[in-house]
Amino acid sequence: MFPLVYDTDIERHATAAEIGAILAAYRGCAERDGRAPLDVLRDRLSPGIQVHLEIVAPSPDGYRFLQVGPAIVAACGRDLTGRLLADAPAEIARPLTSLFDRVVADGRPLFTVQRSLDARAVRVWDRLVLPARAPEGEDRLLVALLPRVRREDLLDAVLEASCDGIMSLRAVRDRGGEVVDAVIMSANGRACDYAGHPVWRLVDGSLRDLFPGLLGTGFWERCVKVVEERTTERFEINLSHARRDTWLRLTVAPLEDGFVMSFNDITDLQYALFEAEVSRQELAAEIEQRQALEAELRRLSITDDLTGVLNRRGFANAVRAQTAVARRYGHDLALLALDIDHFKHVNDRFGHAAGDTVLMAVAALFVDSARVDIDIVGRVGGEEFMVLLPHTALGGALAFAERLRRSLADTDIAVGGERVRITTSIGLRAFGPGISPEQMLLDADKALYRAKALGRNRTVVFEGADSLAPADPA
Image (cartoon, rainbow, N blue to C red):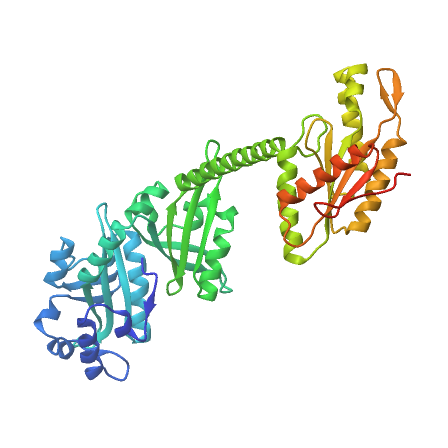
C-alpha cells in the first residue's frame, strides 16, 4: 500500500502545500525525544489544516482513532473516530500499523503517499505522521491526510486519454538488494484493457505473476537494467500465440526505486508492414522482370536473328558511339566492310537454307577472330558484314583484314552434303579528324565496291575520294 516512505526531504516529495506548514509548526515545538506537545502543535496549525488531521493513540488492542477531521470524513464517506485500526481491512491495517510503529519507535516524522482502492477509482493522499504526546504524557500520533486532488486529477486525465497502456511499478528486492520482481503501483484504463485485468487486480500485484508471458522475451532483464542503471529503454517484443503473434512497443523509464512503463499493441502495424514488404518485393520482382524483358527486346531490336551478331541498326549505333569516343580521346579506330563473294551461286546451287548455313558459319568465324569485348561484328545486309576495330590504327586493321580474308578462304564449310570454300572482299576505312560516323560507313562501302570491281577476294583501303589502295592478295 505504501511503496515509498520518506523520513528526509519530505517537503520535496509532498505535493500538498500544507505539508510544509505542518512540518514547520512541528519543528518549532518538538522536544528532544522528537515528540511535540499535541495541544501546542494543533494550536499552531490553521483551521483549514486542522480539518485534515487525525489523532491516533497506541493501545493494547492496536492503534485507535481518537479524532478524524471532517474533511477526511467527507472524502472517505465514513468516520473512523473511536475505532481501531485493526478493524480495517488487512491490506490497509498492516502497512499503517508498520508505519505508526516506526514513528513511535524512532520519534521522527514519516511521509508517504497512500493509494486506497475501491471499485471505481484510485484515491491518492499525502500522509504525514508526526510523533506527539498528550498532556498526560501518553504517546499520540498526529496524522495529516491531504488529498492530491488537483495534481492527481490532471495526471489521471492525461493517463486515461493516452493511447498507450501506462503503469508505474515499485522494485521488489531480495535481502541482497537484487531486483527480483516489481509491484504495480498504478495503471491506466488502456493498461487494464491490454492486461485483461481490472485495476483492482493490477494494483499491488506482482508484474512477474500477472505477465508471465513477458519473462522469456528479455523484457524483465531490460526492466532491471532501467532500475539499476537509471536509463530509459525503448524496444519491441514479440509474443507468440497459437493463432497470431502479438507485437508490443515498450518504453521503460526509471521512477524512484522502480520504473514507469508505457506499451502499445503494434500488431496491426507490424502485419501492415509485412504486407507492405511483400507487396514491395512482388513489385520489385515485377519491375525486374519487366526490365529484363525490355532489355531482351532492346537486344532483339539490334541483333540479327540468323547470326546473332548486331544488325544494321545496332551496328550503326555502335559506330556512332565509338567514333564519339575516338574523337574525344584521340583513340585510333578502323572499320571493315566485308561482302561474301559469289554468294548468289551458293543460294542458286544449294538453296536458301544452305545459304543461311554459310552466313552463320561466316559470322561465327568473324566473331572468333575478333577481340572479345573490344571488336564489334555486325551483319548489315544479306551477305554483307562489318567489323569495327576500336584502338586499332590503319596498319593493324589492314593486317587483321588480311588474316580474316585468308582464314575464310582456307575454311571448309559443309553445305548440302558438300564442303565448299568461299572468299570475301573487304573495304577498310580508318577514322580521322572531321569524319562523321555516316561518312565512315559510306567510305568503307566504297572501298568494298572497289575490291569487288578489282576481282574480289582482296582488301582495299580507302585513302580519299580518288585514292583507293588495294592490298596485294596472297
